Image (tube, rainbow, N blue to C red; front, side):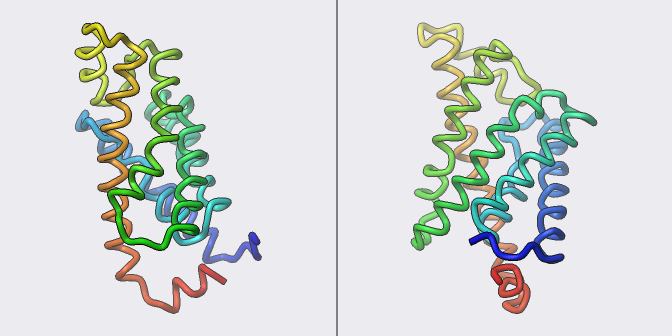
Length: 183
């Protein structure tokens, strides 16, 4: 069940949006081949579940898209899928294998991302991975498959790093706070 929307949940979602925006700005400015724009979404989905996990992705895409990176608006469905998938993966699967969980949450988001990158933008976006896509697209692989390959690997490492950082933070949270979020 969704439960009652508490001040703690609203505050966590707002914090997650800020984390996503700051992360995406850092990746954009430094032209990193990873995105850093989903740490807040992942944290919210792990702590609150799939329903609440979609909100940080939507809100941060809207804010970032209107302020610093127009491409973020087009990738909003990726944030939604990532939040929902992360919530489901961490509700159903209690193992601690971050490599496997990163793979599970990366595949659906990568498929959507690659389709958007190839079909809407022709492989050219504001991301640092654009150079990798353009290099691979000149091979017999072609644009769509090169977008999928680059997107999967960059998403996977981005999600793996995000999961590691999020779990490092969650371990430091007091039990009283995590219990308030779960109830």
